[in-house]
Length: 304
Ligand code: PSU
Ligand code: MN
Figure 1 (spheres, helix red, strand yellow):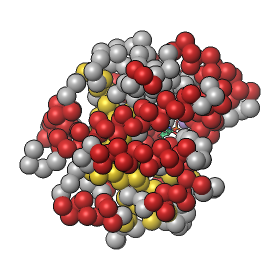
Figure 2 (cartoon, rainbow, N blue to C red):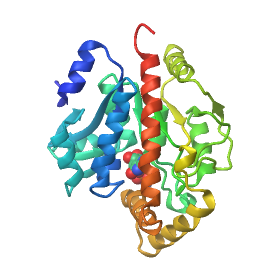
Figure 3 (cartoon, rainbow, N blue to C red):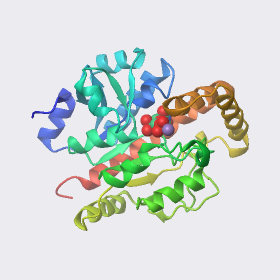
């Protein structure tokens, strides 16, 4: 069976030339940020990857076809589209088989990146264990994906709307390396310090690339989570973001928001409550992750 999977002209050329590639997700575009900032951010992130010496591959499903790399026209259309599915491992095949369009979460982007032979992926924050998960059982499929698909994911930690200690525990149970960069603390998305210590620390992209290669060589399945703190100038201190998070969580509970809607709802409410400051921080941290991912991809490129 030939897979319904196509490469953009830019990605196709990069593959032919053996250039390092960085995968980018699309749920952050369709469900994570409002128009037009979503399109502006997506383009800026791609530009950042190029400036750092790698080629960006934004991944999405358009009318039943997995796209590895989007043209500007496709990206713009996706950023404004309504009715786009939010795809994780559970829904990817169904979306493709029925010819629908969908944006890939961290989990689905990892699956598609691996299919395309791309080993490094940059995003904002991964999904994790939601607060109250002991009752709701809401644990993002991103965590399981990190345990089974060999892609190194660069994020600014897990979103501070989550239960971070439980998220770390689950990652440990699943055998996922969590590697902080440039500091010992696990970053908390909008803030640099979660107050928790990350299990591993590596300050050099070449070390992260070497650890990725070694996992493969040792036959250990799964990827790595690289936790890259938001730059100091862009961070929102914990005291400033916590009230917005708490208020958003209360609202979600009152409105009975569940399943796939939880993360987009919380992000949207937090953007509104911080008057866009959290959106600006979100953009800054994704750009920062794109730079680091490009450096790791370059270190992983054959012949290095
Ligand atoms: N990072 C962001 N914004 C987002 C997301 C990540 O800065 O919107 C998305 C990712 O696609 C991630 C998803 O996989 O949120 C997690 O959703 P859930 O909690 O429903 O698994
Ligand atoms: Mn969930």
